[in-house]
Amino acid sequence: MMAQAIKRLYAREHLKISKIFKRQSEAASRPRVVRLGSREIITEGLYLGFWKDISHRCMTASWPAFIGGAALVFIVFNAVFAVFYWIGDQPVSNVPGGAYIDYLYFSIETLSTAGYGDMHPQTHYGHFVAAVELFTGIFSMSLMTGLIFARFSRPNARLLFADHPVISSHDGKPTLMLRLANERHNIISNATARLWAFKDIVSIEGQSFRRFYELPLIRNESPALALSWTLFHVLDEASPLYGLDADGLAAANVSLVVVVSGYDVIAAQTVLARKSYDHPEIRFGHRYAEILGTTEDGRLRVDYGMFHQTVPD
View 1 (cartoon, rainbow, N blue to C red):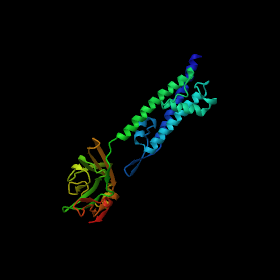
View 2 (tube, rainbow, N blue to C red):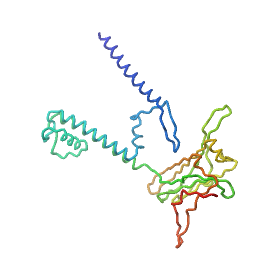
View 3 (cartoon, rainbow, N blue to C red):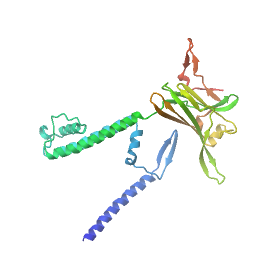
View 4 (cartoon, rainbow, N blue to C red):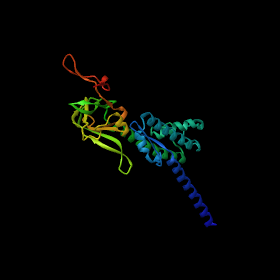
């Protein structure tokens, strides 16, 4: 009899595990849309559960979603503990009529460690539930404090990138140009920029690859980035984009990625920003509208209202 019971238990557990793996396999087989810049990619055969990467989801969620999720967890925790108080035999003193709403208020006071004092546990059962809730409250509050601090303390650069890269003549040579600006107008020292091009190629064996190339810049460092900065890449024979027009860029499915990093002297942290462009966004035969000028009293004037505008060469 004992052996048969063990066999039945083993069969039930094996069936549960098989169902779990089946659900994971079905979830992995569902296509998922991944956004890389402005490009949408469909991925299949890979599944990452919600709770397996919860810290990353908390860090990348928008502020409304993050605050809404925290409020929902707070409400659920208090509602559950209020039920445990409610089903007990008067575990908390000074609860008129044993109403559930009063236990909910007491749960909020306990979970948040406020403890006003008018209601308090008066039985061993009430003290036990309150102790568990206090531990949950301390743990959850510490976790929430850490997440909020991490979200606020993340270094980020408020860099504004032009909507369109342009290709025009510069110093008598065809040049790819890309303009960016520091929205905060603080000093980003030792700013470094790197520009990459991605294009589709076909090997001799006929296999398709997505290959990236770093595009050399005329000047890829700035000692102090505070206003605007235009990057220049000469389209000479050494350039991966040499000889490509708009149709050539489309045929090779060319995209650009620019990465800018530097030291924020106010935040005392290294900051980084990136921007990606697809080939339809590159404008041939255009240059950026002039945004620098001088006022009547001789001071430098920067018109960011024309920052994204381009004009025919």
